[in-house]
Amino acid sequence: MHGRVAIYAGTFDPVTLGHIDVVKRACQIFDSVVVAVATKPGKKPLFPLEERVELAKECLKGIPNASVEGFHGLLVDFAKVKNARVVLRGLRELSDFETEFQQAIVNRKLSPSVETVFIVTDPKYFYVNSTAVKEIASLGGAIDCMVSKPVEKALRKRFGK
Image (cartoon, rainbow, N blue to C red; front, top):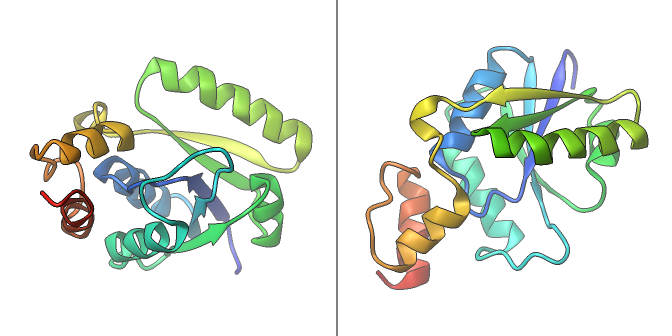
């Protein structure tokens, strides 16, 4: 990969319209954005890694300079492998900043050459998060304003709703 590469990492369980918004906007700033779908030891995701990667690929297929990969291990190590000097983090609300700021400091300690760039999600997605999406879907509620069609279909199938 050449040019300015940024990594946008998360569990994406599942990918939401807020995530997609951050990727689209980041792709206007960076030459390439790698959406890095994490395994996150200790977390029990609803969807296995392979399915989360496939859903993200489906949702982002119309964005030419975005790609999706699953990864294990430290984000800063993955960034080095991808020749990325930037880690992207999406922010919805002030409480996100506290957690993300702490993670940025840790990443900086682990790899001083990797910078963290924050992108504020479009206000229409401030309320959207994967946990809420899964809860609403499990109860048969409307999620079409929070996720793309492929994700909605996968959630309905998973919950039998």
